[in-house]
Length: 466
Image 1 (cartoon, rainbow, N blue to C red):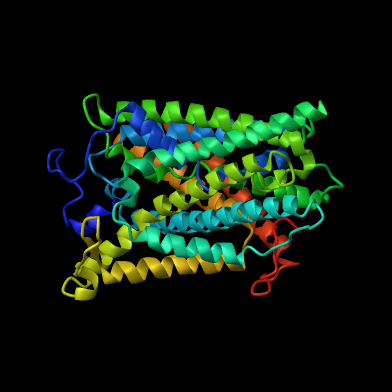
Image 2 (image 1 turned 135 degrees about the horizontal axis):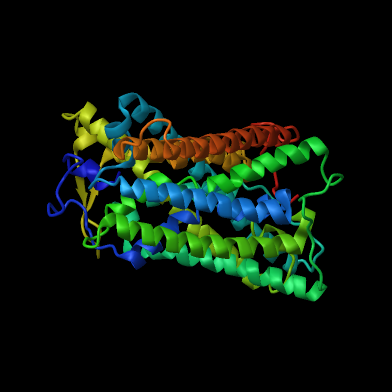
């Protein structure tokens, strides 16, 4: 759902020519948008995930999840109906009950990704400060610090960004997210290659982190959690439906969407796997939970600061891209619930010198501010980003990326029950369910382990680099 659906009350099924949605997308612009949402808040943890799984299973799972995502995205594209949101597609094909269940997962995903983005961006801000502090002190000061101040700064920034109308539709936002992501991935790749070349050896093993570095039980939980981190980076399928609404035709929207999805996933998966394998080869068992965090004391530290700044800009934008559909849904519901309330419907013109007049809505101001404050507080209480990312992957991957697209495809294509194609699709769904459950259990176990030395509300001294 787009934000303008709140401001213009029209049916979901509208014509191409009503001006409701700008339909100018082609393969290249659509690929850029898909890349922007593909490299989300969970991506910086993938080097750590590969380190838990090893040289064989880690990259293999990266390509496996990418293949599953591409396949189910193709199924969803074939079932595309004009201006139909993901949830409306579920409702039209699977009924009201499953649409409500789908809505729950659609709420949990942006909430979880917003928290992950907040934590990860604050770690990158700390990394910049800590790197500069370390070099200014001549490597004598450990420069320990808390992430709370940086989370508060990010929260204030996101409150401001959340009030910008149609933030996700600005052209610069569509391109800045993939550009920033490739910048910080390239920085990690370059620093990793430099370290491996200087050492002339690779670290890491075929089976992942070794027993001794962690206990056998902890290794099992970490492996499951790593699956969740990978799954979290492929749980954004509902957003593709909104992107497909911006594609022009002819050729058909489905044909363009399939090409764009295949192109973007091929580029991002290959580049991410290369980057994170190099980082794993650099650190081995000591691979940091967040990309670039482990390079804190390496030169050139200005390049590291540049990469971390790219992470901050990228995640600040991704926070908004993840939350905008949720913002729009709540505001549309409020307008329908209280259509005569000035608090929910009135747009107060606020002239901004040098810019156009800003339309201030009090409900939008209060609701979005409360949401950002809530995610900031949760991030401060549970600042374990890879644990949260694993939980999001465990909760979101199977229902949003596999189950609902498969069921919609079966209904629309009228695939007979117990036919070969039906059985294969159900096997795929069941296998992904098993992966998701394992990921969720492993991430919850990881959260429990991490909370032992840092219980909630006593975590103000937590330092992710300590």
